[in-house]
Image (cartoon, rainbow, N blue to C red; front, side, top):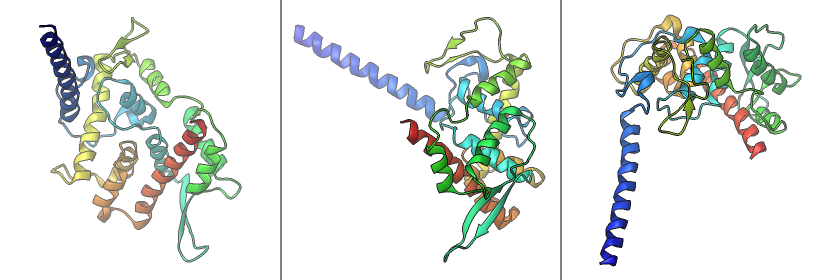
Length: 278
């Protein structure tokens, strides 16, 4: 009798574990939210190519990392890639191609005297200026070595914390419990107000649009007048390479090269620091 009970208990335990695993798999696949407060339980299907959150990448970083919505990728290297491409589109960074041997080597030349008014963005920009050395050229290996020699926090701050302040300054985070609420994923967050959630929703709608573009699914035609802004957010979502391929008829060869190079340099910036602190 005891053996049967033990067997039944083991079977129930296995069933519970399997059910829990399936729940998370299904939730992941369908894109369900783990908290109703921000987006509800249904996946947002709408697409929009409007630039959300007034173009503030820190605020976008906060939504992607600290709100109860499934965003899979770890974005710490995609965040500086987005800024690198934005600086390129603003003329602060340029592509330089040298041929020291048999093949062309691509570099990003960074304008060291550029004025960036936002202090947090400027902090990141100055790190890349320092990594570029005296010649002002950013190379993948050079950036990795520079970052490796400076172990510690990647930015000197958490970009999502800056984004949180952006929401707080606009009154878009619920007041009350300062410690926040514990989500199903074990992440403690302070929910957005309805107005804040409506703003954050635009980020999901933009990602849906860019994802559809990258995968070649039916979608609205791309607004070529804002293609640089869209590629900037494509970097943030990890889609820029695919978008550049799909939008090749709208892009110069240089822009296609820069899209890839921004991601590679940002990845080396992250990897060097990450290896040094392991």
